[in-house]
Length: 296
Length: 266
Image (cartoon, rainbow over all chains, first blue to last red; front, side, top):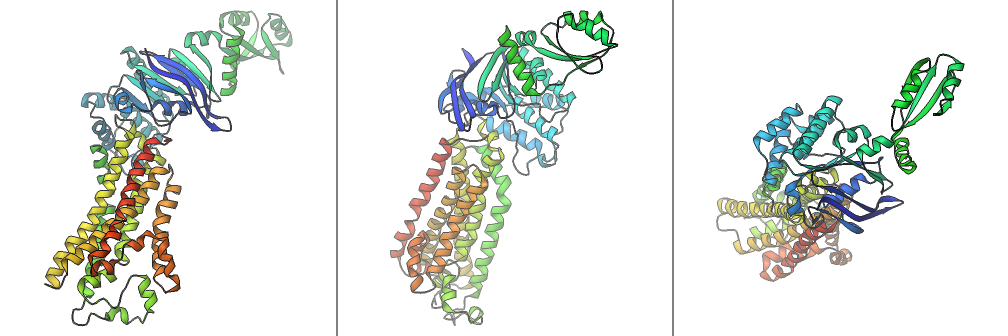
């Protein structure tokens, strides 16, 4: 049985916003990355899983139970980080964690200390005075506190510095090794690549790809900007048969799909003076992933 | 009922609730102190202002009331005992549900193994407890202080009828605020109706008392059913006052029902 299952889930907010006919499943023990640009519907799907929204049609289940009607039976097993974490007015960090323990009747002191240490968080102060990163850490600690079997994390690393992002990645890997199921939404491929087994790509409320991370990496397209010593060197390189667009100053933009080795060995045969990876907008990356898959 | 949430409410709102209770008690003691059993017809303090009787009537002041319970009915229950707690219920009602939903804090509650009905019921119970606290504080303080300041002058059944009627009215006022707090997921709309409606009813009631031509306005506000002077005079006025109880409690129930069904942007 799937730990998490969405079955033709539809929520139409009008003007093309919402999620449409969304179906996918996450097996127990799997880490599923949920990727899409802002407004693609990631949070809407996650809110359905938490039972906060009523589907227009279709539905979703966790551990085989309907998310909307069975929160009491589902939520003991769920850890949740909302996309925008918010805390009670005037509450202190430590008080908030105690509130979470009390309302759940779950959680152990040892686990809490371990999580606080991992994220180097001192929860004694007022949440209002904490930085965005500290609030995010507090939300993460609260979600993992009761050692849940299933973690639903909506953009969990937003606001975290690179060191803390790495700590988070380590934590996710550790939990995965302990057999936990994870659903992580993100707009960063790199983060999902590091933590997840499978990726679903959401675009305008529809799932446009649902693939193993390894497979996606194979199909990934990268664009390199290569500078050559001379114009002849550039023209020699162009004869190698790569998907290259020559530019000014003996430069060429080369698109490489999947394996990098042939491209790198080809470069070695020419006098190369510079090599840059082109930064791509999220949209381009999505389109390329999607396109790469279509070429297969 | 969710104990952890109840505890959080208490911690977050006890200052507000106690503050309102104490100020209401203070007002009550001030009014009670103004009572002059020897010359109760015209209270020197108010008469000195030479205000037109219709304006005084709008504020529920009845210069004809001569007996202690009637004096309180006119000077305290006509306006202060309505308007002041109303502000508390508006603020509290809005904070207990709509604000938590708008800010997203409700997610911390509903991500736990609880049902929405439990969460809404907990918030309703907290607001109801605050309503009872206001009326109970005034009732007990009134009985004790009148016994001490004016022994034997208080018509206790009349005073209890007054407070029973006030309780029914308070349940309706708080019910309105609670319902709209449950219905809307933003404090703007929750306050627009959760505060707007109780205030409109109060203003309409005040206007309706200003003269014969304005009298028809009393049909536009349920607060008319709470008539302090009639409550003091006899038990006949109790039935209409208790008629406020039913819509009040229905609004609480409806609020919980609506919250249980709606989409929550958490």
